Image (cartoon, rainbow, N blue to C red; front, side, top):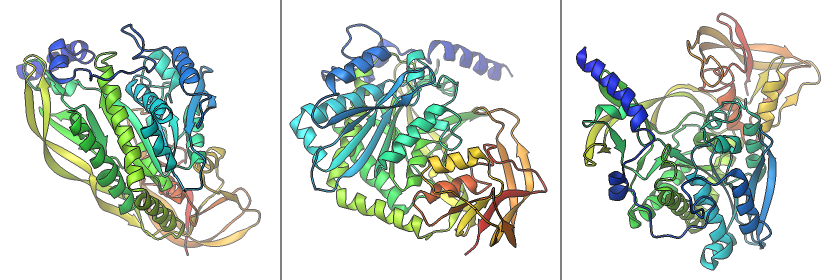
Length: 511
């Protein structure tokens, strides 16, 4: 009992003392800044602060806008009325080009993506060797996605929502603005640059005074089984592995991204991504190749910012170089994914279980500044086992569809057709056999979990009902949103109402 109380008290002290700070000894020994000159918004300021939003926009207008091959578009305004800029970098020519999307600062307190991506944009315009990449790729860069969060130096948007948990509900208008711009760009490869918290309450159980994570960069490997094997291979075996080699050459450390929880004194990790609410999986549902990067930085302010920005720059540049180097292969992977989606080739893995593994993870003792290696149990979503699989239907019908359901599906690039006359379809309906509402609110809702049984029947539908044919691009969005057991789909996010013992308004149209 005394030991448990001590751990609790240590955790509280740790949160206040360690979470937002890093000792000069640890900084100098492990995370010193590189000998690289940055002239990006914050790193060009001779002050210990981040650039203001106005300074960022002025920098973009001076250093990017108006240069040959560059166009800065305002894709919309934030809740606070601030412009959201996207930088488009393209060269004319008849050679087919891969289309690349990169974004940073989806979480407002993660500034290294802004600095690293703007440095990349400047190099693509001013450095002839780097600019040559634009002969084979066209690049769209959203450097400061969550402008209101950046101004407030907080993770969430002005509405208090996590924009990287809003890729299927679209509760925040900023999420809609960003998604619309991304879908219009229709990227072959899409990357999201984040930062992670190096010192967490869970790490208080290590060392005498807690520990901090040792890695400069952590990669989020998409694992959703809705994706093709080619998409997963390109993300990990091509983009990630080649970026890791570049980081190694510059002396930066890397690992896989994980979250942690501590139960009974044991820390358990979770890694990989399969949920559609995050960009790491959401990108891939449009048949693009997803790349998601986390640098070590939340809570560090200006500490090691040049190092963090350099990691972003090197990783983003490596991604572009990999795209050029493997251009034909990546083009074929994306084309194959689109062809299989339109052709309704694959069954739907609605629910998949994670594998359990053990990994050695390196921390740094906050007191001694010495490495601590711990072998930790890990729930690994990079290797999934199908648990609930359904055949892919011809399409879906939403009976008496709401404006929100239709709006989201159309935002995701789907053709949603309202039936003009009564028509009978062969369907499978979902009967809700189990229904549970979470006891705690998460992202503005109480999440709903259901179990269902499908029942084959012929049913007549008419005006007010909407049909989504799956023989179209982006159909995988419909799959993850409309299958009721899907994590963060319409039922889970309470966009579609589910009641125990009653059928859903969603129907599978059978071939």
